[in-house]
Amino acid sequence: MTQKGDSLRQHSSTSPSDEDEILESDYTPEQYAKLLKKIDRYLLPLMWFSYGIQQTDKTAVSTQALFGLREDTHLVGQQYSWLTTIFYLAYVCGEFPSNFLLQRWALGRTLSIYMLFWGVCVICIAAAQNWTHLMVLRGLQGFFECTISPGFVLVISSWYRTEEHASRQLFWQSANAGFGIIFSLCMYGIGTHAEKYGGLAAWRAISLFLGTATLLLSVTSFALLGSPKEVRWMNKDEKRMAAARIVKNKAGRDVTGVKWSWPQVAEAFKDPQLYFCCANAFMSSVPNGGLSTFGSLMNQSFGFTKLQVLLMDIPRSVVSVLVFVAVGIYTRRVANRRMYIMALGTLPPFAGMLAMALLPNTPEYKWIKWGMYLMTMPFVLALFLGWTLISSNVAGRTKKTIISSATFIGYCTGNMCGSQIFKEADGPRYIPGTIGCSVCFGLEFFLICAWRAWYVWQNRRRDREAAASGRSPEEMEKEGRDMGERDVTDLRNPHFRYAL
Image 1: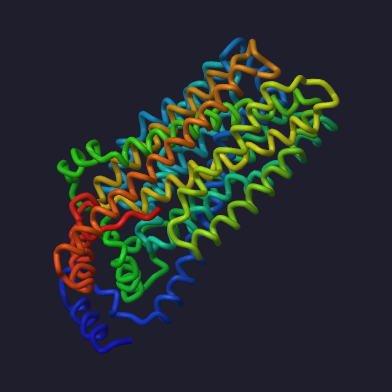
Image 2 (image 1 turned 135 degrees about the horizontal axis):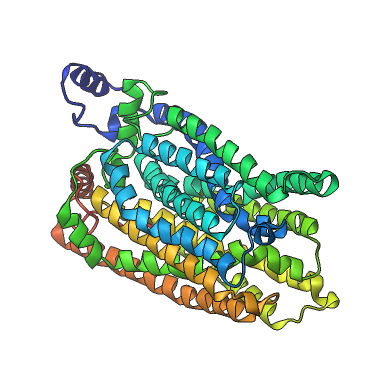
């Protein structure tokens, strides 16, 4: 530890404010490496399980539909589709107020309290008797679940350096598939027991199981989750070192409780990033809404039994986890490859959805259609890596909150549309819905290419201006970090460079 670091810590311990000057050079690489291991050890497993249970809670209706939810609650027509639509409609309504609360109040406490409430909603679904009960509970569940993804985006930007964003964010997002493996096995056990012994309907038992697991995780999150200022598992010096780690991001450090900035709100709506992020989330989420609601029913239409459907989803989840691990390692080692992967990730699902729409539901095509369904898996890369770009490329806490909220509004709107373009009357093949999803993937490919071109143009323009200024790289680097610490936005910081 440097002598300068010692003197700064002495100043920090005697000063009434913790906003003393913090430099990356205050600590050694060895100290940072040790701290990073501790951060990963506490945050990543907790975020993995929390995101996994949230995704499972959200999409469980698809599995519950296999075990009699529609029949027991007397759903008709498009009422089943509306269970997903109302979820995301409430999700949208909760985005801006909840994200404002995430910024103004304690990040970890807000997330854990919201988790507690949606866990209660999931448990109550087990007692639902009709469409009205389900609609009310699914709406409340959507409102409380709206914090988890944008909240975790803020957690990543508060703790990790830009080059670490993609790998860490992909880790907890891999729970979308990884936890799905655990869920499928648990649901297979619940379904098998219900078919063999009767008693409580399997879909009701699924809600009780998932809701209880959510409540347990909410208690754990309350104790461990949060920003560097909040957590109790780090001492004062470690919190200061955590702040010093991310100075180089030029996007500021942990500023939970910062004053809301209306100029940053105005800038966010003028920034093309908001519209790129929102459109990308929308185009990814139209297929996501359709598959999460009707995926199990589509698989059953290929010729599988309802218990086989649960097992057949496991290989898709395994492949997804392996792809996430590979992409996480690759993006950690090779800079500026995220957007190439995003664009390429739209091509296999484009072909897979189109083939699923065109091939007939006859026994000889059973495994081919399942293979086409397996090909849709990479589409989540464009969505999830797009979220990591918010952490890396948006500076200014209020601006980050606005763009994050707008992105998740696009996400919700896409999921609502996806659940509605799959009509009950079009089953079991759902040809219009699958073709619509394929079109979205094609459009998303060109959107990502244009998005990357805008970042490249911005970086090159700033490089030319920096070269013409005649200032040394060291001076510009220091000024860029200082501006980041003062919560200056990416558009107003000429030394900020966009990650690709």
